[in-house]
Length: 396
Image (cartoon, rainbow, N blue to C red; front, side, top):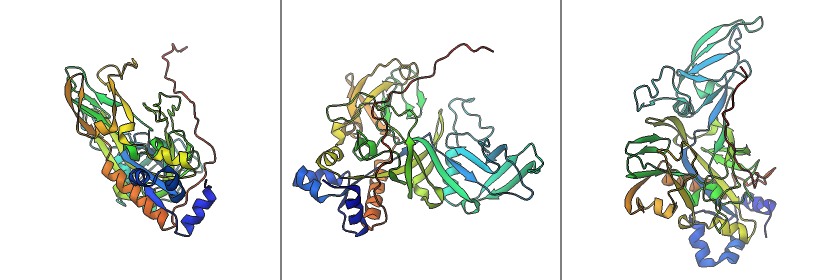
């Protein structure tokens, strides 16, 4: 019905009709699929929540004399130096040096890579301490200095796995508390934790990856970034409902963008007691409405999206495959569900309010002609499974 070129021409002319993934549901109910597909050009989707597989490449430029960094700490958080002389990679889940972690269980995990990234985007100063073994052309062996994002040549967020298409709901069937990446799980199924924007989430609005693929332009914490690859653990060969929507983890995205253009409120360090540190990140993805079927997919509702409830006291750790039950996001967002005759409180680590804000911000950028949609350079793998790590005897 429409092409990317036609939609972008309307965006550049500021005549494109853009709606969020919330707005489009009621609009289609009123207008019908066929008429709405003719009228609407883009639907904006979004999510905001912890995305552990995130990090950034930082380039400091050369000191005088030069140093070839082999070990580095940023605000006492170790950064990887096994790249070029003054490039490092800072990971979101790296702990601060000498953090007691879970030595005194449950640990507090007050500061880590995600918090350092938050400070960086906020324009605050951080400390760099770097070491080297020294070479003829890079003689400096140690440097300690302070810097902000303005001092860096590049600060590029490079995230191997973001935007899980769907995900587990965590519950605890044991008699002891479980501290997980989905929050504190109280004993005897007293509460559960989940993390998804549901009907606003990008890959749930494009379940078969028709418009989201390698090269897709995305809104990454306020910057215009893009999908550079399938995300790690991309597992599109999954259980799906009759509507094609995954009923388990499924697809993921590898994202990159310029941190110098990001907004601090959408890059937030996270401390998860008893588990570790992470980074909460805001992502928005525009979906071009190419035809009626594409519009139909963006009308998915929370009541039509189901996630598996997994017992994180044993079944998750030992990959038993057991599912307690499946719940819709409408049920999860209600605050209380009933499982096996027991009332269970629900809680989300993702922020639906933030996701809604991102979808609106992206809508406004497109409406102003500032954000074009992009045809994928390559599709995401449509039927890929995800393997595990086998414990094999070593030869040494």
